[in-house]
Length: 111
Length: 113
Image (cartoon, rainbow over all chains, first blue to last red; front, side):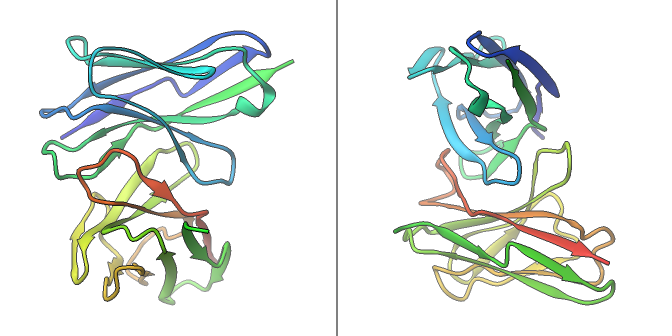
């Protein structure tokens, strides 16, 4: 099967940079996705990496190393509204199976 | 506006009763999904459907049932066989399963008393 590991909680200061790591195990790899979820809300798609390297979208960047089965989400210029849970996800073992999500990292941004 | 709707936002039921959660999408997506979320846990897949009149079990299908009679609708029934039904239920959809971007509804918080 697939498994994903990410820290359960991270705390960072407003204006700072924070990195949320994700390691995964899957027999077939079709890319690593990241989702954001505010308390009581729906998860929303943030980014997707299929190839090694860094993808940047505004204040958020996502990195992937397929050889290390590792990725991270980088949040810059942290704002209070970034306080949320962040989930990494991979597709199942074949290309036609649904996403499998990690347990999520709860980010708390403090003043 | 295109999107996914789930109703109601909060639902209370007595133990032993079946309850059906609704999920409707107007995004013209073929694939739809049901997830369960418990505090401090990720999203666990209950059922998914790739096309109308077809669906597959996810990781935690026991005690749940679904139907997919229309492309737009994918209702989830939580049966009395589900041992711990109190949870946050999320419906999602995308154009096809082999796509990494999923769009989620606002969720239904079910509390069984």
